[in-house]
Image (tube, rainbow, N blue to C red):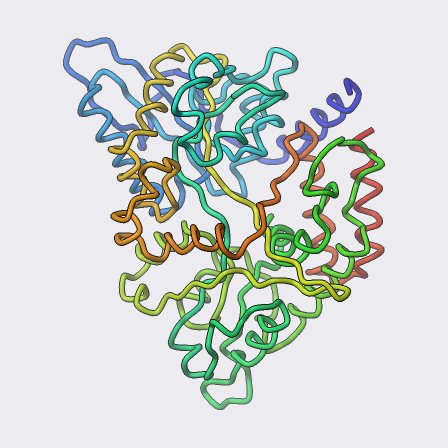
Length: 460
């Protein structure tokens, strides 16, 4: 296990060294354009830094800024500075900071990231054990995703922000024009045929300029995750390990090149090669979303956060925004329910923080009904079951509330990434070979066989 950790740490260190990043000091009081809170004159200023991967997105920035403003009204001596960059670059930046011991007082991640980043400071851990603050309280049972926020049975994060899974968003007007009833799309094959039918030449110049589905094809991490969330995991049970990404997490259980995953990769290659179904060339998630908003793509895969993004982009688009669940997958005579990842954003407190109690006070307040109402502006589903489960929330957020129905009536239990320190290495390996398959169009089986060999080395 020690050798596995050293190898994982070395690879993460090398990956982080590629980018040039500005280190955000932990409680260092540095000036920042994103600082919030003015404080009362003469009072000692408590300065907290808050790192998150979602602040670069307008709906989240709006919600987080509003959270801090509201908190400062009652706590004027607390100044919270937000450090955020785009999702694609956030994780290497965070890795570099943790290795240097300069991570923020509060770091917001996803549950599968906790073990990896906590381990970057060795046995002492980079973040505080929160058992004494969470166990036996309502926080343990009322927050979606709290049970996922553990390392070796102990809580290292609070699921106090919001969560989401994924579904298929569609443009109602384009479906109506094509004569497609979204309720008729039940299986993956139904989805593919609809995507092909929705790909049309709208201006009569002989070239397709409206596509059925805008997927990510390129270096963005979603080049892998959109494929395995929609197709691979339902049929294989796991992209890294089988049986729902469960342990034991050993090299001999690597599942990436299983026959079901190979079939899923070949199916995805066929979809993205179809000139009506998906656009040609490469694109990241930002371009994919722009194509959907501009009417160049009729469908895209996203989560409830996309609702807030669309509202920020153009409120007029909301009337044309539809949502359906991910389709079931038929494979070797069986039908598999979709089992997409659940994405709760959870917050950790740095072990190096000068003000851990004050950081905790802010995190605990974020789980309150007052704060959760503000968080709902982001488009994601607030983590508090007591708040998000109300009729008032469903009436005010009808699209987001559909994800509750999907979870309860359509989806199988979510398959989550394995909570192990090696996840960063395994995930980067998968992204590399997904690019080989879906960008360079290399053979799926040979690519996944090579990926399996690299993953096994990482686990030894």
